Image 1 (cartoon, protein in one colour):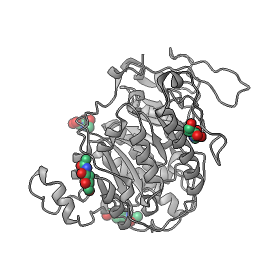
Image 2 (cartoon, helix red, strand yellow; image 1 turned 180 degrees about the vertical axis):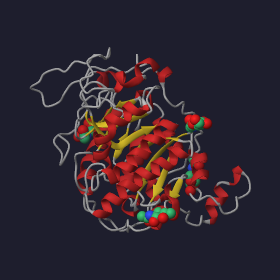
Image 3 (tube, helix red, strand yellow; image 1 turned 120 degrees about the vertical axis):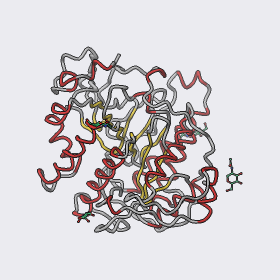
Image 4 (tube, protein in one colour; image 1 turned 135 degrees about the vertical axis):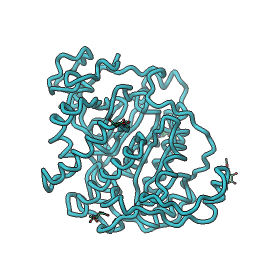
Length: 397
Ligand SMILES: *[C@@H]1O[C@H](CO)[C@@H](O)[C@H](O)[C@H]1NC(C)=O
Ligand SMILES: *[C@@H]1O[C@H](CO)[C@@H](O)[C@H](O)[C@H]1NC(C)=O
Ligand SMILES: *[C@@H]1O[C@H](CO)[C@@H](O)[C@H](O)[C@H]1NC(C)=O
Ligand SMILES: *[C@@H]1O[C@H](CO)[C@@H](O)[C@H](O)[C@H]1NC(C)=O
């Protein structure tokens, strides 16, 4: 349905009205709180963006994580304490001996990397699919604690369906402080330490504070670095639960596929409300150029965060670069902002529109409880739609 032709030109991704799209969607029941969307995207396996052929030797268990100080997060939905102020100074934490041993099947331990990114390229190479796609998340120490968000994140993969657990082999966890790096290494194979200057990532960041902006823009810059190294990435916040493989809902023609806080029915309308907490970008000159403009937008629209600037530049840049931007349907790639209530369809669920680590964890635990029952139930009960999220929670409703 969404062939390459659809993605060509401003026509496909142009005006917010998007009335020329053949992918007509029907907005039902204006009185309903939720906009119901008719599925417009092909979900057939043949259209999968990334042919993830996993080599399944992952031994990651979140239970072994060391106890680390809990830290409350005060920020918006996308606010993983994430980004770095300056990726050019990134350097690896010295790798412990057993990590080198674990890599012994790749030959003798390599000499200290000379690249300005530290061992980033090596980590990407190890984690990437054969199409050079990685899944990426960013964490700080608070999230590596047992029972923390990282635990729930891993748990969702393990309870997920259709082999989604195998995707963990392609997950790179970017850590922002040494404690998080160690915590990551205890539970996962692909950890990267992003050394940064200027911001103390261990401390609490108030939404829209100077440090917060620095972090979000740093995360953006780091993503650009990944593209420049030739890797496609699917960035996921760590408060996104992965139940099924989301790649099947990303169009082949999309240069950028971004999740939606609110999905208005047309995946190619720039009128959708994007959320950078779940974002696929295909590496190309066009997307690198888009990120360059995005970074420049920081100074053009001084004081705005990167998601606001995305909204401010999207029309001109998408037109200029002929970029295919797909907004992901919340029926499949969902979040608390616009909750998908169909457990038979949902792929991922983001604790967006939810402030505070405690609230997110509370609601996500509830979500996983329901999902556990759902996956254990006989197919006919599942098909009959007998399972529903427990509503309302603190944020989920
Ligand atoms: C995982 O690691 C534990 C110890 O770290 C080991 O006992 C176990 O056999 C490993 N499992 C797999 C599947 O490699
Ligand atoms: C980032 O790195 C560049 C070059 O290494 C340096 O000139 C610049 O001041 C750094 N910026 C910050 C915010 O640290
Ligand atoms: C970017 O453009 C240059 C020259 O136009 C080309 O050689 C290069 O392969 C392109 N890179 C990518 C990733 O498309
Ligand atoms: C899961 O199923 C058990 C047994 O039927 C039930 O007691 C429990 O309340 C269910 N939990 C949720 C969250 O639905």
